Image (cartoon, rainbow, N blue to C red; front, side, top):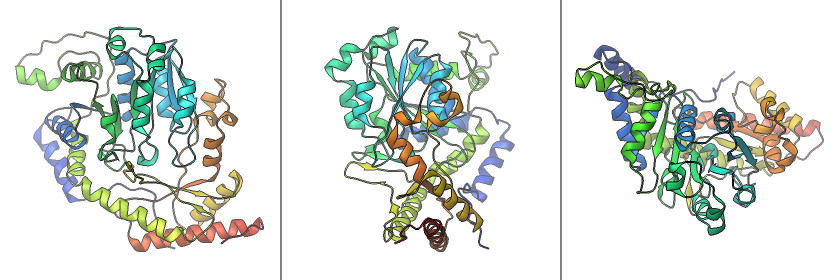
Length: 412
């Protein structure tokens, strides 16, 4: 039986050599390679500053803390996302306000977002699900709308300086995504990428905060502040102490510990240098999936390009028409039984016990519920061959036909 994994990382001698170089350098924690990766991300994304951290989750929380989000505040998030998006809001003592998605592409519904805004709203957190950017131009217009700006109530000097709701993108999936021919991250105040093992660009674990506030803010000062927060509130990192030949430091706040070490940055340096090649192959995989699946009426294909947006081709989110949650799971079981690994992205927040127990109800988000009930994420990774893709599609088709026939449904 041919086995197809879901999303193994691309590992080769280039990565082994770069990591070995770091190990032999004598500097394995945050140092020159992490700083080099930050500069390369800045150049790729075209933002003023980037801070690498140990995960996208910690990056998003650091930004919320920097913005002063606290108890009594509200942060608007999509109901259809991974738990990290909302968890970081809860960590700050604030309330996640969940909104439904649009049918087309899994991004949140901006008409619903507007209705959810109150005087307590401090941040809107769009999520580029699967690498497809949200409609950022419309989101920018929304936060600058006169009535929305008038409703905004600042709690601190940073919020007063911004003078409106902040846009903090959970861009975990979307490094390399474009909106209006520019990096999608440039349409946000902050965007946070993930470099987790299954992401397009990996450092095994890790993330990057893109700082892109209006020019009235000092990006270098924000970088220093976030860097300090990521190091227990220490005002001098290890590299700076070494350079200054001075051990002296101070702890200026009770910060966190979430810096990226050079060992992990080493993987990222190889990955980012060949990222165009990665995106090209992932697009080819998406195109072939679409070509092969388009002949089946039951296949609702994902949107990954339109007039203004280009995805990073992170997740191929196939929806099966006219199936129930139970039938979708039966299809997945059949696919797994045939040696192909698939997944489901994501279990919406209101279905998770922690949020159900807070009073969120899945029925309040009908489009997200419908999408979750019918979605199957197909394998996408650099070394997936065209032959593998044909095998995956054949396996999916056989499994759908089998389950639909058991339920007396057409399988065309």
